[in-house]
Structure formats: C-alpha cells, structure tokens
Length: 79
Image (cartoon, rainbow, N blue to C red):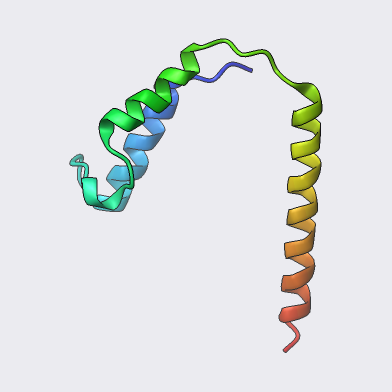
C-alpha cells in the first residue's frame, strides 16, 4: 500500500476545519509550522524498503499495549 500524500493533506485540512470551524489554520493550535509539515510530507516521496521484522515487532508491541490498556480499563470500571 502506497501512502497517498494528497489524501493525507486533505484529511489534515478537513480535521483542522472541523476543529476551528473555518478554513483558516490557527498556527498556535498545532505544534509545527507549515514548513515543518511540508518537510515531513516530502519524506513520503522517498522509496524506503520495508523492514518486515521491524514491522512485525512493532505490531506485536502495539497489540500488547492495547491488550494491557484494555485489561487496566476493565479492572478500573468495577470501582
């Protein structure tokens, strides 16, 4: 699956409009400048090979984190 840069930008703009109620961007509401955001998005143009071992390990760690949080919430709801 390839990252769709235009779609990501549209999603970000939609989210910001929903939060602010207008098309104007409140720079104080985000922690990065537009130049930093552009630099971040430019990284999507670089083809980097996928490290399958890293991806599998990350997926497993995230799944463990989700399961741990669910167990904590389940035990906290009974009080």
